[in-house]
Length: 131
Image (cartoon, rainbow, N blue to C red; front, side, top):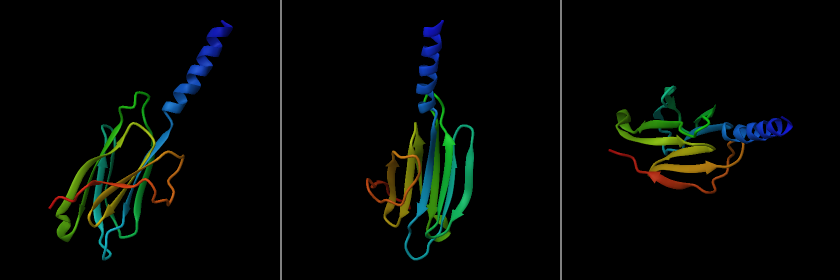
């Protein structure tokens, strides 16, 4: 019985690491004080729609599920009448995913810390805007 109790304790601690906090951040770094429209959704949640002003950001922390099957899809629109757009998977599995809307496209930075920071390391272009 003692071995079973120890096993269950260790197993519970391991599982807690897989159900820890995760999140997405979407940052507006467009030129000329442009705003953009954002809407994200998963199987169970909808975030937005919301207008993100130039220099602003949207951040949402959440708990992902045990099996790592949680996905968030996002749609971003910018430009005159928000006609330039892009749809993409903004979150899959775990950690923190930071997306930056820049004039020439949408950039991604995965963060392996507990919270978002202001660093610009490990950022790379993932998507172009669609006209």
